[in-house]
Structure formats: C-alpha cells, structure tokens
Length: 299
Image 1 (cartoon, rainbow, N blue to C red):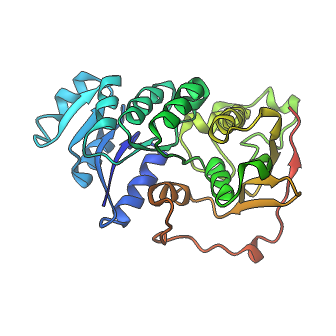
Image 2 (image 1 turned 90 degrees about the horizontal axis):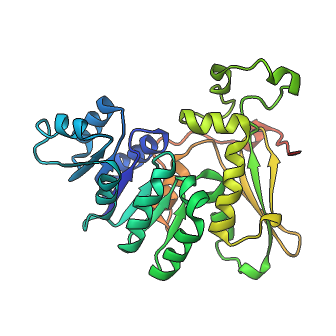
C-alpha cells in the first residue's frame, strides 16, 4: 500500500489520479489532499477518500468543512499545503496544483524524503535549480507526470546519459494551430479553451493555445533531464499519439506512444518502476489511426 498526498485534487490531473487510486484500492490510498475553490467537489472527495488531512484555499472554507468532517484535520494556504505534503504517513506526493504555489510544498516534501510525482511545471520553471539540488541532496525520486516528460523519462529507462544526443518534445499546436496571424486577431477566450486533442484545466488549455505551455515544458525538461536548451527540440504532432522522443547519438529515435489518457503517466509515476493494467483503458489501434504527422515549429 502506497500512501499518497494529492495536491490539487479537484483539477484534471487530480481527478485522473483519484480514478487510478479508486481503481486500485489495495495498492494506493490518498491520506491527504488539497483543493482551492471547488468546495462541492472537495466535499465529495473527502467522503470518497476519507483522508486524514485536507488543505483548502481559505480559513473560512476550513471552518465551514471542519464540523462536517470531524475525523479530518484541516489547514489552509501554503502552510496547509506544506502540512498535507509532509504528513508522516505520506510516501509519495503528487503535486498537481496550478501555479507558483506548488514550489513550496514540493520543496517541503523533498526535505522530508518523500517521493515526488510532479505535475506542476512552475516548480521547475521558477525553482528548477533549488528543486533539483534538493532532490540530489536528499536522494529521492522525482517522477514526471506531464505526458511529454513522462514519455521522455520512459524512453530513457535503460539508456546511458552519455548516449543521449537530444530530446524531442511533441506539441499538439493547441486551439489555434491552423489559424493565420490575421485570423488570430479575432480569437476569443472561448475558442482558446476548445483544445482539439485534450481535456485539461483552463490555465493549461490557454497556455497551450498560445504555445506558452510548450516553452514551460522545455524549461522543465532542461532541469528534469539535465539537458542543454539547444538540445531540446519541439515538433508539431497533431494526433498527440507520440508523446515525446529521445534521440540517441547513433541516430536512433526512441518514442513513447499511447492514447490521450493522462491515467497512464499518472499511474506509471505511482507504480514506478513497475507497471499495472489501467482499468477501463480505451482501445488503441495504430492501424485505425493510419498516419502520424510531424511539422516543424517556427518560433
């Protein structure tokens, strides 16, 4: 049984993590969690998961929930996130909160020797040097959850670092990938939120439409894999079947392929180095897809 702290439980990554956990109740238990404003969904998760500790966005929310769940301890703000991440019962912290606030509980958990499953780009974009120095000092595992970085991580298994030439991160292109510069002048927020391939939270979907998200992923890859920026490339791949690639010095390309199902990288981080069957996985047949397309990205 692996005890998990789930930070950002009501978001897209959080919801998929809950699905993985509830599908494997003999393998995982969420002992602490956090959510910000989605109180109704938070209440539902507390009833389902029966955590020991819950961090919320405000003291008012904590005071509202405490009488409803007398067996649960509540905290709020950054101190609440840090407490959720560092409970003695926690084995692994999955950081899926959005924004810069994710840096603080991630660092706190590393210092306590927790395994980190990271789905918060900002922690490495803001504090990559701090985070990675702490990881090496504490000798803990930091496992990427973003599909692109999980793909690279999986391709690197069994490879020697000196044999890696470069990394190739795939990009769907986002909501506006087929629009001209002139057409982009008329786009709306609603259109930006209509991602062609993925169902994600609002922030990451907007960042994907502007390609800002891919810039953050390049920075994240730099820190995660100790790779120079000029050796990290981005290619447009509309189908989102190849999640990313590793190019070796002999010219071989190693690619990780799969359906657009975030449960796969989440579950791999939770079970690493082992693998398990994903419950109710969607059928995946490359012969039905037919062709995969890759296009150069010009920034």
